Amino acid sequence: MTNLKSLFTGTVAVGALVASMTAAQADTWRYAFEEALDEVQGVFAQKFKEEIEANSDHEVQLFPYGTLGESADIMEQAQAGILQFVNQSPGFTGALIPEAQVFFVPYLLPQNQEQLNEFFRTSVAINEMFPDLYAEQGLELLTMYPEGEVVITTKEPFTTPEDLNDVRVRVMTNPLLVESYRAFGATPTPLPWGEVYGGLQTNIIQGQENPMFFVESTKMYEVTDHITFTGHNNFTTALMANSDFFDGLSEEDQTLVNDAVDVAFNHILEYQEGLTESALEAILEAKPSMTVTRLTDEQRTPFQESAERVEAAFIEMTGERGQEILEQMKADLEAVAD
Ligand code: 6CS
Image (cartoon, rainbow, N blue to C red):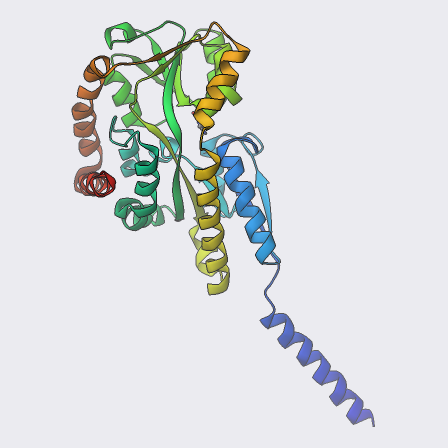
């Protein structure tokens, strides 16, 4: 009897062990990004979280901008494995992965939204070449996505590179963006995001660039008076996972993550339809004196001409690998152009 009982208990124990080994483990994944919950990166993150939690027992904890520090801090935490996911823009990653600065060659990305979206979906450079470069830094590149046309907001109006002479324009912290604003005639000032509002308020800087939704949500219009559409860029950002974490996931969980990224990617493109226009409306309602200037093709020409110099600087900084990326990007863009 005793033997039978212990045999039975043993069987139950082994059964429970096997069940716990085969049942997916419920984990908590930490995900940090560079914006607020209701800004583009936050909307993307919320969709990702929703998908993961609807399709698994895992939980995703979201850490918006500021809760864990600046963009550079969350990247360090992701590389160290404290965070499982990090959304960081090439504007900052460019300091770590020089080739990521290719997104700051002016007038490279198309202004046509459909073409741009198709480029992000199909680009060989993004989907096949960049992942290896990110992997060298311990990062699994999950996706890159656009956040909207970049506009420049300044304290004084400008239409020519000469007008930008001696204007200190804040840029994200990568050397190519510095080069690009130098080529625009300005005095580029790389700063982390947290120093921008105060810098403009105290006149340490007199301008900055960002997509319209961010100009509105972060109230850049309170500390600058003029918005200029130069057409020189569209803001690109990227979602990454810590490589060791991602490689250690079961195949099922890797698929879960990739599927959630796909859903969030499509969601964020849809979410941004009309966002530039509605943000501009909100700005003008809050500050009717704000001026909005769209440079004409003729006025854009000298800015466009600076692209050559910036491309040369990019190749100088990144060598053969950079050149290959740039050429592939151009081929990818050609493929989506009509
Ligand atoms: O300019 C910046 O630093 C910020 N801009 C955007 C649109 N997102 C995050 C980034 O920190």
